[in-house]
Length: 455
Image (cartoon, rainbow, N blue to C red; front, side, top):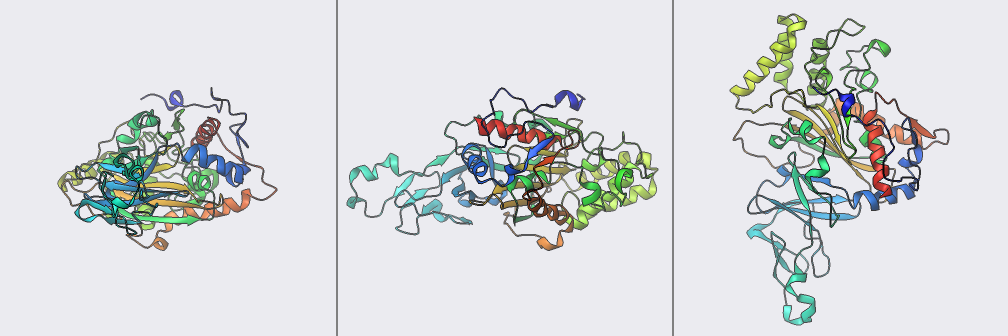
């Protein structure tokens, strides 16, 4: 396997001149606080980033059947995502060509493959072409030219079980946007996964603060004591899951080949200073993830780990555990992706898609800015699993699944987000301090953001 260091970028320098970006990062160890609350910086992001970047607009299982639609909102923009008769997906600016009425709100389905404006009854086919104008003879001919009546489309790309959109008329080619990280994430087969539960939460924090809470494993010891097996301070190995690869596009991912905390085998990890084995750490993780998140794990994975831990020497745990996991998956006709040294269990895709994945189970995240307030944001949490082949697709709806308040593991992460926004706005805090080896994802991400804002 190529060493991660060989694939990493350790400098914030770039061919793009970022000198005019306000509050830019000039030293990779320091991120100016104003980037998280300054109104001018917020407006610059809205113009330069969100109106240009490829961004995940919806899960494909939000719109499983022809005629299904869902509304994607980013800042003050509303986009209509519609499943087509051939099962492709199209995106349109959510505005009737008559007087701008939003044609769809929330989620729903268009009957008879017609999009009908609720105001005056103008109609459109699923592909956005206008099919009817009420009282057309009363309009001037130039107002009802057929080419001008079709819904305004946006570019769409499909990847990892999601439909992505961009507002840029001549965007970066879709696949090129994922250069470097695609293979590492592809191997997890997110495209086969469906939603177990989905919650969207509003945080009183900047969208970047919410993003960065899931950019490193440095926080596990303090934030997730159950995963750390209540091992404290430097007795817990801070280097677990902290080797990162990065790209100039702003993407980053953890090398999971030797990290049991991020889905790797753990076979190359020595016992921690506490004497706990990688097998014990792994069991603690899968148990906490199920009990507190109902994501990345299942009751059967917990039971299998417990059985193998009791029956086998710890040095043989992973070999037997994986054998049982894959045997059971085959019995249930679940195409669990085979382990691969290039696979990652933790990643972020610039600008706002992050995930963790183990053995066909995933927890993925999407952060979006509030339309007007840099101190607030919206954050989507999705629990995903690969179902048995041929299983019916259940339409994904926000709020389905276990109550948000019951997901204590996710709350452990969320609890720090609003606290951080409070602290970085104090006059005594001028910049966040980063450890390059532990918080490489954050460093690389901000370097890319400055390049985008300078473009």
